[in-house]
Structure formats: C-alpha cells, structure tokens
Image (cartoon, rainbow, N blue to C red; front, side, top):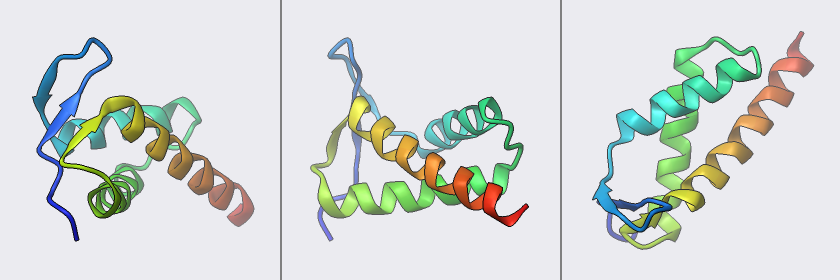
Length: 85
C-alpha cells in the first residue's frame, strides 16, 4: 500500500490536513440529500473510499478526486438500497 493520505488540496489550491471525520460527515449529508439517513452506511462508504484512495493515489489528494470517488460509492449504495426494498 502507498503512503496514507495526509493532505487535501482544495479547489482554491489551499492545502489542508486530511480529516476522515469531515469526509464522513460530507458523505452523510450527501446520503441525506438522496433520502438515505444512515450514519453507519456513511462511515462504511468513507472507509471503503479512503482505503481505495490510499492504495491508488499520492498522499496529497485533490478534493475533487475524493468527491468523485465518494459520489460513485453513494450511487452504488443507493442502487443497492433501492433493490433491497
């Protein structure tokens, strides 16, 4: 596995410390936007995404890259939830 993500490069170009809790909160808010109120699912998606990003990307990650990966996971999980109903 490559180095662990330590920084996020925001759209403005500002470099800030990576905080997985902030990512998890953003995932939860995105899930709420598609009517999925499940903090456990948000943490699971965050953990899976961060693991994959740590394996494939440099330790300084662009925010847009993280968001794209998370959006993909959210769509997949939304489809799974709909199929289960």
